[in-house]
Length: 127
Image 1 (cartoon, rainbow, N blue to C red):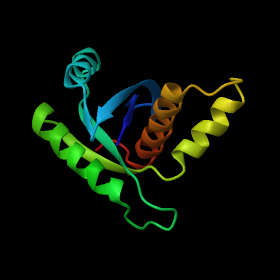
Image 2 (tube, rainbow, N blue to C red):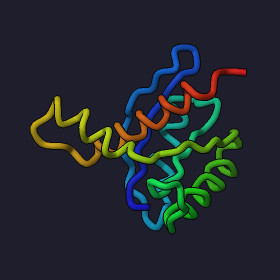
Image 3 (cartoon, helix red, strand yellow):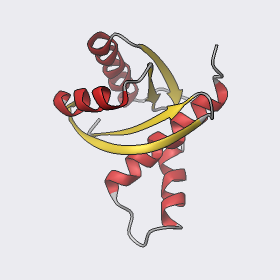
Image 4 (tube, one colour):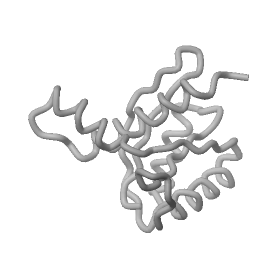
């Protein structure tokens, strides 16, 4: 995992907004940047995308995402949920192509995170 798309969302409206993309080194982000995002947005929970193949099979990066989720849970002491991230990058590319001539890679990852989170919010109403 080289990049981590970040989005924020809310259950009330089941909407999400792309924030940024963080660089990662072997699945480990710049924790200072991550800490700043958590301090600013004060999330109640975390949603991590699980990358699988189109037919739902596990691929190697799947295990990196699970490990990343464990690190987030340990660091921020928040509940971590998992979301299907299949086709989110393709959908983000399509959406961005209609607004931008050149797709910014940072914006692409954040937009994919937004799509994934919005789908997760729609399928997981508040308790």
